[in-house]
Image (tube, rainbow, N blue to C red; front, side):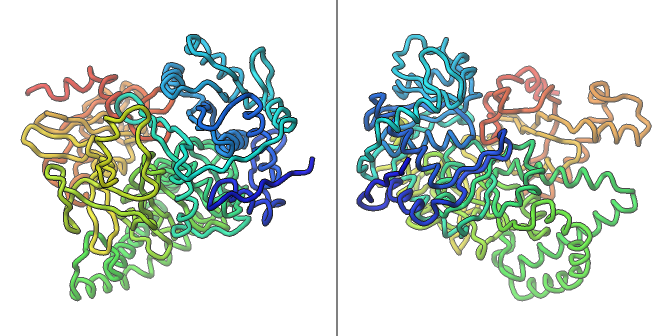
Amino acid sequence: MTLTVPPLTTGFSFASLWHELIQKHGDRIALRDPHAEPTLELTYRQVYEQITNFAGGLQALGVSIGDRVAIIADNSPRWLVADMGSLLMGAVNVPRSAVADPQELAYVIRHSGSRTLIVENLKTWQRLAPHIQDLEITATILLSSESSPGCLAFKDILKKGQDHGFTAPVLPLDHLATLIYTSGTTGQPKGVMLTHGNLLHQVEYLDVVVQPQPGDKVLTILPTWHSYERACEYFLLSRACTLIYTNPKLLKKDLTSENPHFLIAVPRIWESVYEGIFRQFKDKSPRQQKLIHFLLSQSETYILNKRIVTGQSIRHLHSGLGAKIAAATQMSLSFPFHRLAQALIFKKVRAAIGTNFKQAISGGGSLPDHIDTFFEMAGICILNGYGLTETSPVLTARRPTDNIRGTIGRPIPKTEIQIRDPETQQPLSPEQKGVIWARGPQVMKGYYNNPEATAKVIDPQGWFNTGDLGWLTPTGHLVITGRAKDTIVLRNGENIEPQPIEDACLQSPYISQIIVVGQDQKRLAALIYPHLDELNAWAESQGIPERDQALLATSAVKELILKDLQPRIKQRFGYRPDDQISDFRFIPEPCTVENGLMTQTLKLRRNLISERYADLIAPLFDEK
């Protein structure tokens, strides 16, 4: 068919954006799925044709501007078509993962008032249907090619739209675009109301962070319905990049075979890469391992002192000339070993990332210091950013030319950041720690049907309370220190942020996951999921006969881990004696999205972990 391009709408809009893309880049590859059979590639023109047909199909079904349309599906080109098609015709889409708990999905559908459902496949629909029998669902669309009574297959909705035609409405920037229900780490999910203007702000201004060129390849691995991945995809598509679909199991292979220019990830992805690299080091001979660790320590010395010399160390903001001269001396002494590390170690690390690689964009959580430092040593540029679903999401980000490690960068355009005293709510000066507040065009309209919750986080002047704790450097770079809701308050009144302690402990070779606990207790303790292979190898080297679960029950392992953690915690920036872990228990399985103990962006759901393992936590604080 001949594609009819709608006229430009007034001002900046998704319709005008796609209009420009197909005029300038219509034949360029927009979406690529190398794992589909056969491999799927769609040009910008083909994607837009599917989008407009999908939008026309929704109009033909009677979906009107403002109607809620639930999208229960995960990453695929068809997800983007459904998302953008519903946005262009003025519906309000309500996205959620297909693997989410059916009762949670039912709550989201019921609370949002969705009557049109777009689901990943027939299996997803059959899993969901029994939980929403009391709802009046007017249409169900499958993103698969399956057919079922009462459901429209993907090709059917496109055909319906092709026959119907599509008229693009002119939508104001404050028109509601999407309701994203926060998976959250506590409580019932709330529907975050994001407008077209909220989303388009990210499209317009994220180029201060990265400057991709048309045709640059980007690996997409995060949940595409989440605000972080979604905003990045919108921005990268607006710059005519090629999005390539991958997943955690195939990431290593795809970095080599697809050779991307960018990767959007969360800290846990970088931790996995880091852990994989160090597992390879363990395959070396003892002599080689000794050399590797020596070179890594020298390279780290070089990088940390370079930060001091260049004024980019947040731990040495007020270093005088003497300190900088001393740091320069350390730099010169460690530089030859740093260069040797580049040749013997980091050259292979960079090759595994790909020869085209420009930058990684990390968000959705704080990047641990040791991960940040390691990739800086390797010469791999990670641009760490910060934001929340409620802020569409990006508020601040590091830039290639302003990449101060340990911070999460300066605000992006039209965004204000303020640090306030948690008690008085008064603004604080630079370097004073408090609660982070933000204001800008990306701040949500509010929580759907929840004015009380909205009023708690958005003040009359439009400032949004992020609930995160941090401080600003004198140059306006933001540093995150913890999450207000995660703060552990000990009986002595000390406030402890668990995340930095957990980050330090995760450097231990014996720990896969750790959750610090201790609210209202005299001391901290932890739940740990171990690296069993590492512990078995240690036991063998010590002549200890027990293995696996029997090994975990031994006092020798408990002593080993506590002894290993103490110096790691003590060396952490900002260490206090109350930070030490007094005791721990092993948990029987890792915290994952599948068992409900992690969010879709791989954050720990602390309240649920505490509930599930209450019987393990209680004995940790028995009075001795």
